[in-house]
Length: 471
Image (spheres, helix red, strand yellow):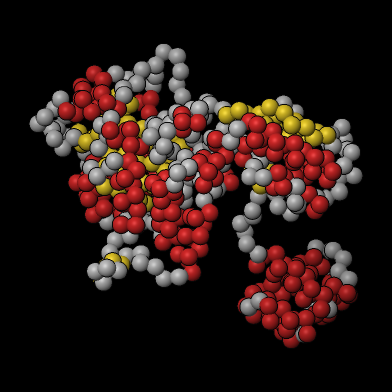
């Protein structure tokens, strides 16, 4: 208690710290409120430490000492909370690492949209108000064959808006085997409940037949909904109803011209990945051609654009969706629209979109290209890490990610980093603590840096000089 009584009077006041040379220097760099709050917090910590019986040195109580600690805190707190990392996991569309990377032209479009006024909802030719959807509708019509299109801020929102606009208070028939749960525990039945559509499950988990749908179609049915099970597969004794059969079921009820066939593709592709010997993924244009009236899909998955949800289909249905008040609540901002429009232009006009879109470029690279990059990266890493570590190029299996093709892997190559002194977990932690964290994976008791998701060999090296000493 005597030490506390002796120390408290020597605690500097907030004003004394702020009026010191060091305090004034901080206020030249940061707002007065931020400096004041940080100074008060530092003095409070000193007081609490003394109350708890901790040692507080006289040198820690000077205004300059307080200002020095506060400066370090403010420097750390004022930096961006978004940390740029190197994705060496082998998962091309890694949800936790931001999914699709944008093409250079899309990045430029975002920067210009952020920095300059643009005709977002203004028809320059007519000199009057326009519609922001007009920026992307023509491209989507050309790429998918749809009559109309609109976008919202993600695919879950697209499904919610589509169901609420077209089936509120009415029955939507879905196969039990397609009632998926996506990341973050969002489930199709929950989204449907929020849309105020009435879920009607048909079939069983592993087998659903056309007759199951036919039996349930009634006066309260608004829609037959097909959900692409992109994030899991049921194998073995299974049966699903193709989209074309759902179209036939609806067409067989001519008195119900209002019945809708809709599909949630989840990832959704604009071009056929089989062109590069990759596993096939449903192509939006094909799904519309096979009978879907409306299709929803994501912008930041296989499309390789920004996060958004895209809805394409019949003009009358898209018109109903766009008139829903929820559309405004779920609409995209100008930077998303700029990035999407630039991405769609690549698909529509580029001779080789796989060379311009990072997502496609990573997916289609050959093993020979990866091995060449791996040789350069391995040599650089050996030089940087030293004799305590072994680095070699070995076969690996990468994944598309973000719920796309979960059971399918893509042949790849990886750098295996091992050590007699350090465990795989310790090596992984070391790479994560680099100035620019490098995120790999541990597999078969090895730390792997998969080259499928690396843009260039140097990405694995630049910040390694900042790694802490593990000795």
